[in-house]
Image 1 (cartoon, rainbow, N blue to C red):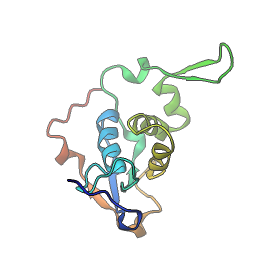
Image 2: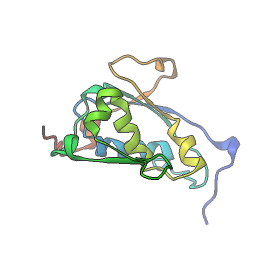
Image 3: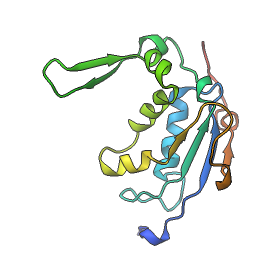
Image 4: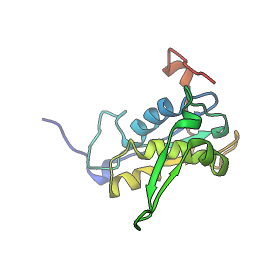
Length: 152
């Protein structure tokens, strides 16, 4: 029989990931597991017991194949004929971090819990970020991914 966590038993820690030459989808799966709390032994599906993730160097993120130009994102305004289409290339020009944020968002549960968990993702371009006082633990992607498959 498994035990569920209570609100006062939840502890959150901080992690830092360098996105330099990282593949978007692979990075998003790692981040979503940490944000949901699936990396902990105390994982509770209906509670927000995940950790905070700080991603730096987002401007150096990669896509495999031709997804950067060919992948399509759709959203609907709610009005008839209001479907909007975009590509990662267009999104990247405006906001480089939005591509990774969308990938992580779609791996989280829908509804209130998913929105709350998404606020634990902090994305920054460059090496500097304002969360150094939280002493984030560094996660090295090269040690996690034994096969670094990156194509340009």
